[in-house]
Image (cartoon, rainbow, N blue to C red):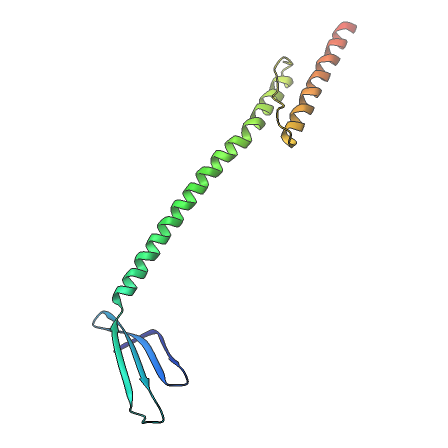
Length: 141
């Protein structure tokens, strides 16, 4: 009889229990006795728990599959959210590129009431200021 790691004692030696492997099957053995009656007075109960172990591994595989699907879904949602967040930044980047080439005619969306909207409005004001200064310089020359 081969003992596994799950073995123990409960209630001050009155109940011994353990899971044993017998012929490839996992058997739960409970031995109960009253020490004041006799040292040999034990009642044994055997139960095949192989099915429990098989069910446990099935549950672990199911849990792992659900966890992997959750992570994939989380990554997809994160990617969509990042694309949504980065769209205004990409537009602002494109507008900055156009301004650096001397094109001040493009419009910048300044719709948000958050920090990105504040930056977009400040960029639009800066672009108008640069255009006005350039026009004044052309008038002077």
